[in-house]
Amino acid sequence: MQDFTQYFLYIPGIVIFLLGSGQVRKWITSNRNGSVDGLVVRCEHVVKKDRKNREAFNYFNTTVEYVNPKTGNKEIHAIKTPTEYAVGQQVRLTKTSEFGNIVINDADESTIFHPVAVMVGGALTILLALWTNQGNEVYAMGCLAALFMGAGACLVHNYVNVSRMGLKPFEAEIIDTYKRQISKSSKILRGDKFIYYPVVKYEMNRSENIMRLHVDSEYEKTFPIGDKITLFYDEKTQQIREKNAQPIQLIIGLMLLILGIAVAFSILTAI
View 1 (tube, helix red, strand yellow):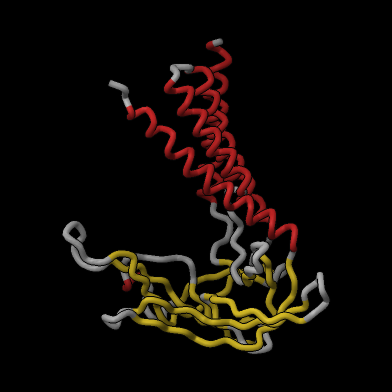
View 2 (cartoon, one colour):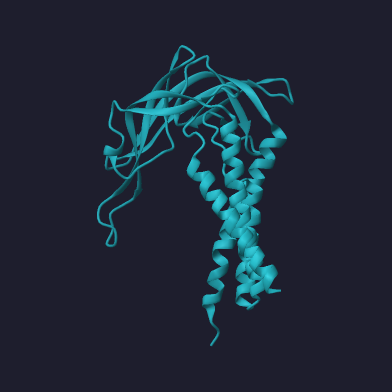
C-alpha cells in the first residue's frame, strides 16, 4: 500500500508559492501603474448588522477624485477603508489590478518578505519536500540552508530600511473598538468568536483623523477606551505607520542567517 503521508510535505510549499505568486501579480501591477494624488470628496461611515443584530461590517465608504494619468480625465472611485478621511484631504492612490481596483495608501507598512521572496521560499519548500522524500539529504539540507539565509536576510533588510526612515512617534487616543466575528458557536466551538481592533483618533497637520488599526486581540479589554497608543509618522511619504523598527526582528534575522550559514558549512564539510 502506497504511503500518502509523504505528499503532505508538499502542502506548505504549495500554499506559500501560490500566496507569493498572487502577491507578485499585485506588485507588478502596482509598479506598472504607479501612484497618483487624489482628493477625498465624500466619506460616509457604514455599519451593517446581521439578522441577530450582530455587527457584520464596519467601514468608511470613501469617495475620491483623481486625474487619470493615461487619459488626463478626472475619475471618481468609491473605496472601502478602515480610516475616516476629511473632505478635501489629499491622499495617495494605487491601482492594484487591471480591472480598476484602487486602494488608498493610508498605512503603508513595509512588508517584511518581498512577494518574489515569498514565491521563491515556496518553491524551495516544495523542493525540500521532494528531496526529503527521495532521501537526497545533501540537496534537502541545501534548500533548508537557503530558506534560513533568505528569511534572515529579509528580516535584517526590512529592519535597516525602517530604521533609516526616521519615523517620528506621536500619541493617538483609543475612542472605540471594532468587533469582527470570526466564527459561530458549533458542536466543536463553544460560543461565538470575535476579534477586536482599536479605533483611534489623532491630530495631524491641524486636522483630526480617525483610523482603525491593524493590531488586534481576542479580548475587548485589551484596548480600553481613552487609553493612549503610540503611532509613527513618516515625513517623507506623509503616512502613518503602526510600528517602528523592531530590534527583535534584527535579532531573529541574524540568528537565521547564522543558522543558514552553519547548515551550508556542514554540507560543504560533509561532501
